[in-house]
View 1 (cartoon, rainbow, N blue to C red):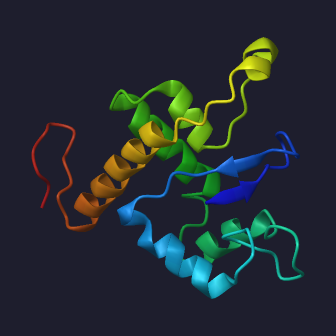
View 2 (view 1 turned 120 degrees about the horizontal axis):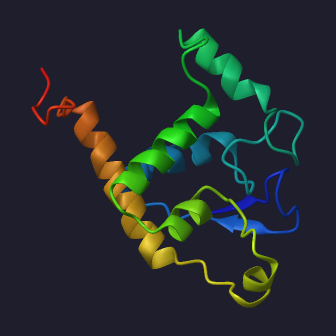
View 3 (view 1 turned 180 degrees about the vertical axis):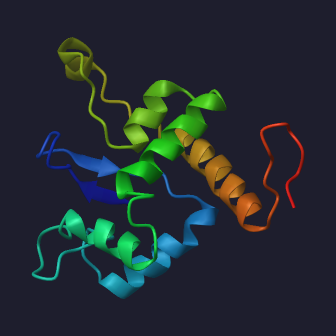
Length: 143
């Protein structure tokens, strides 16, 4: 799935995301939001939804002051790093562009196969959490 370059990064770059079996909800969302190139289009078309929309949605769900859209990204990044997934693959999945200008000029690899495996692991992990198989800090399965 492709997403436009994010505002704070290369505006001309398309972002390719590795979507796995556990991400069926994203595909269902895509069917609801239309046939455009964005999962989260704005109301006026041609642009992404306002940056504040996710924050307001989280507030309406009772997460005011407890979670942000970037908080979910931070949790994913931390968890994937803790499970020793490649830093470069995680950064690409989060649509973070390379900071090294020379490397960016020569290496255009997307690592889709590796990112797909990483996202499948993450989807499986979230499914286990949803089923209640939450591991406590001590390594025991929590109630």
